[in-house]
Length: 519
Image 1: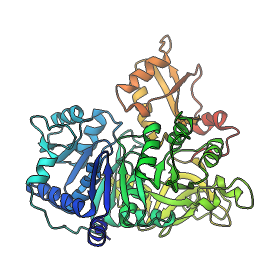
Image 2: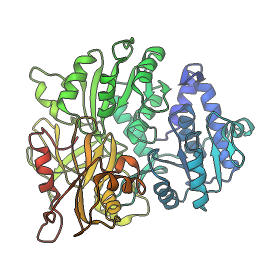
Image 3: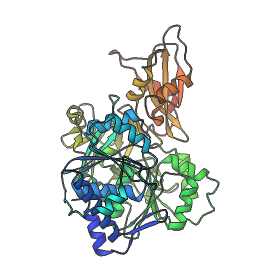
Image 4: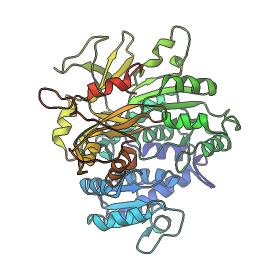
């Protein structure tokens, strides 16, 4: 299993078919293969060796797609950077991964320079934007034009394909190591589950650093489809692209779906080409899901549940279960059943498997399960147990094999499709001199699915406003991780006998009456 196989197959069987559409740029599969091989050759000329790490910090584009494939072609591993991170977060991850080449576009040009100034291991900075390359940066298009096409390194199977950073429970990001086999089977799982074929025209509306988009994009290539790109999600532009480029499938998180339904242009465009929507990554309010099903009757809805460690899919709830009436309506609250190649079980704190209906931690096994966390053997051992990924989510299975997520074992918040680990936010809050203790939890939010909410106890005689704390956090961590609401407690936070803050108790009043406490 090797990720460049799809490029070879498409270029051989449908060389003139459209591979990518980005604004006015279009490339056939034959052209795409040549560009990928040339950029891989350029990387090799720059001294890249098998297994070396190459980072990319950019908005969605056809070039981002080429970079993924070129890195694989050269035998290296990609490190896609979260576009919403701060410079310190990027620096930590790039230094942790030992990145030697950083690729940026126009949007992140200055941030890329700031990162390179700090990270001594970065040998060169490549500009892959639409504007001319500034002095001191290598030009992406010039590198392609001047390079000799390289033979495919044919890295495959258990070879490292990429390191995908996700929030860390210790306050630092963790690098999830995914192999060619992991990403290939993850893509095959989702592609088969939503019935892809060569007519697919997939719109990259979600960020391309996100594993959910990576999985669906890889699936589109494997099945011989085409790719359409928008730099970032904007509802009016999304509607125009679906109509203009006859998009058939896409991925949206609940926040995007809400924005789409609220868009004044909704209903003004021909969306008849749109056949399939996969959603997930954060909690979807039932009212929003019902509204979306009614507003888009021609679109087949599929819910995906998973995480980066699973490349990224565990279960799918297909269109046949997205009904509001009849015998199948009761499954709508579930996360679906395991995808092909995937096994799911529920385990207790003792590690033993639980029976149907019994709540425990969701564990997943399959060829999509990660290799481990980069440079973190202890966390790898705690999460990857006898081949099973312990997800940190609490749930139960019914007698039909449907998974129901009921709570989160680990203190992770999923807001607008982004993972936020409470420890990271709490560490930032505790750096404010007025804060004596705090707890960060996820609370229901109509727009974001979950909202990052902080409960703060201040030092005696010290006062600080909620706005001051939010601004304090924004200087230390990415904006999406910062509290969107803050409350102050006059009493110490509730704790267990061992002194651990009882976050489950703090969550109760916010989640009372909700159908489920997590996506």
